[in-house]
Image (cartoon, rainbow, N blue to C red; front, side, top):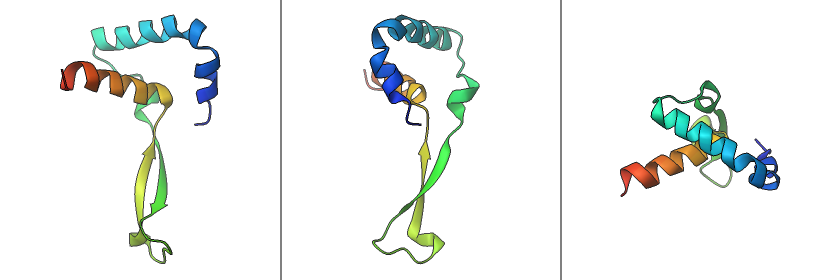
Length: 79
């Protein structure tokens, strides 16, 4: 988390590599192990949370994982 700037600054160099990675993952029907992990962060549902039920879990996944998921949804779920 927090390394999105690397992708932005290196987009011209990394675009081809990321495209190859996405295409390989799609062609071979796999998801890299690193993309399957997430950090779970509690987020308050109310202004002043007092009990555990006042929080909801939010999964923070990698940028590449979110990019791949958006591509799959756009190209295969909603065409």
